[in-house]
Image (cartoon, rainbow, N blue to C red):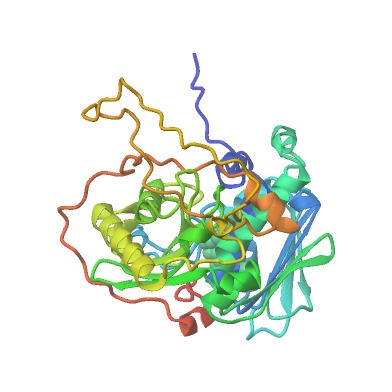
Length: 441
Ligand code: ADP
Ligand code: MG
């Protein structure tokens, strides 16, 4: 029998990669927004139609691309962000895998318009399901616009698997939040069906949170701050009385990247123990800066899960920092005389018959018997859940309740490694330059 193994054509390989990288419109939005950040943009515009199924368009004023790079960026494993394997150990950019644009272009019709600041004229490229359709010079603004049309048009199985527009929009908003929260120094505008859904001016983190949620968040947030050799923690947590029954406002960012970590979630959740009801979860917007060499971001194609070398210590530091903030800033809830139930005692009524108090005794009661169910310490009078309008309605309903039992540590135990000093942290001015400006391909 003759040999039967052959290399797959790039277009097929890209579609396979797209299966992991682009699961839904929100994944494409995430990748395109991340590229704008890496390009050093200070102004980003996102336009979607039909929840991204018809159109996702992202425009930035970042560094733009040369004519050649504009073509190269759609090649598989084409990136300006790393050059050698060692670079993986010190990643400062959001992207590095060089597969997002190639993947997206294999499952959609893509138009790219880009111009570097130093160039007179820009370049435009059309690609249709990995097939190069043409490149031409174009007059355009400095920066880059990527338009992704008819996502999954050539992958009916994926397209049919998509959820309702409402749900897909919710996922996109979630991705938008994850990027917008880390970059309050960047202006973002988000159009949905030609209407502005968000317009975010620059400001500090607290202002960004308020612009994304509502002005009521001014009263709800407590700062968290902790600087150690291993990790610098900053951000905000929601006051315990604003804890919610559904997840959603729970954000960890490590070196500017949104990450998911059930383990670290447990550290924060545990700090709120006995302050919020068992079925509620706290809100948090927590930023962790660590030496890039102490994390591995290359463990998942979507880059939202990372390994920390010393996650046990980070857990302990985070837990303590949140606890300290709650103790420092969260004053005991003041009595509200308008609603306090104990104040509504009925007035004595002379005509009411006097009833003898009845004492019931349980003859089987044994004070030395252990209770099987531990008693909850006390129930906290939750404020009325604020009414959430419009897009927030979508947002709050679909998250799973938090697990209360400690999740396993999602990694090998590296805690024997020596702690490494932080080398740098992001400063807003760093982001004005593209993060990957160093080399030509
Ligand atoms: P990665 O981000 O992992 O490098 P991508 O496929 O997302 O891979 O992008 C490939 C390359 O295209 C990037 O490394 C970058 O050089 C370039 N690029 C993509 N988007 C932009 C953009 N908005 N502005 C400037 N360059 C971009
Ligand atoms: Mg990228």
